[in-house]
Image 1 (tube, helix red, strand yellow):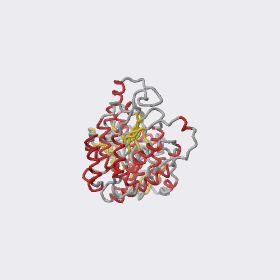
Image 2 (cartoon, helix red, strand yellow):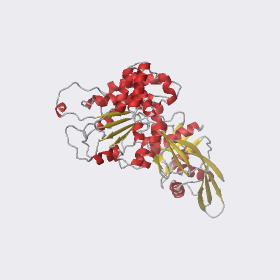
Image 3 (tube, rainbow, N blue to C red):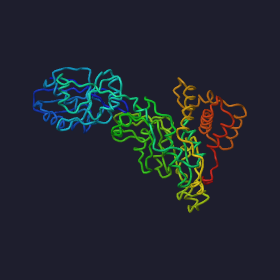
Image 4 (cartoon, rainbow, N blue to C red):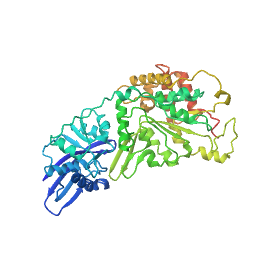
Length: 510
């Protein structure tokens, strides 16, 4: 007796259909699973056997052979438990009705109840894209699965319910969700209005938000670098539904989707500790999973005390910054994870933190300062669009009555207007904000008059700018012009962009 049941598996951030083929034949009772399943898949034999028995069904004492097709692709996880059990019960004719256009995903407990699994959202989306009209998922995954539109989602609590549903003995309505409710009240716990002073740093972060630029903040301890960085997501435009869907898929695969949150609607803010490994930062492992650069997709990756990070971990950021995607190659194949994020770096100027500070004495030697600052390589610094000093607020300013700072909402409104200009300008090009501009597009979208061009060429020679640095000044100038609503880049826009690139900071040891 042969049966075939559809299931889903994840590869990268996308899913593909797995056909679970079950064959029952005479011979010595055995239970074999083929088709490149990992340890968790192999262990399904014991879970399925106990779940079938404890659900009131008879487990066949025959030779059972299961094939997970396509057999040349590695499969992992516990999501195949349910389709395995369904396939066996079809062979024993416990399930009499045939429903071809339905997929099954879920882990089985020994008592037959269904447990949630990671990666449900990409699985449901993948099933819809492959023309499957219905999918059965664990009740625990109901809300996450219902985020995908255009496919019927049937959440179940146990194996017995699934069998009764398939035999027509139990009526179960497909589960639906109103996605719009999740975008109505997106709120943050922090606000730029809470930050006193630091107008220069706020200006830089506004430019970064408007154009998708990377930022380096340098200054002594307590100057407010972390405070500013944690408020940066509050001035970014709200996620669109498509962006939220992509972010949620990544978190679902990584098993980091917060309980009771079927859809992530706020931009991610990831701030890993400096002890993080290279694999945890960019992704990978024996069975590749997304790293911090992908978990920060469409959001912010904040690396505080950047010189304290392992050098190989820092340098591996270069490729994701340029390509906006991380590709991990293993024996079993290549896996790609998106990594469109804004990078914010923060650092002290020296090991003690007070080199160049007017109010504290630095106790570091010349060699210690040089060694500390050299941990950030030139190639990485060259990929940072905006460099800004964050000076400590003077003590008398803490208690001074002053006009309240601009709120995040006010700054965000300007950022959104600038982003709208960019979307209109780059419509149909695959570019969404200025930092994504490629070299061949700069001439078209970043035109300069003769005086401005001469000024920038002189700066190129005087400050030994690289070609990448020259291009980044043009991109930042384009963003500054957009914030002012200007159609063309003017001299003052380039001058401001230049000062964020080549400022001779007192914090850098010469």
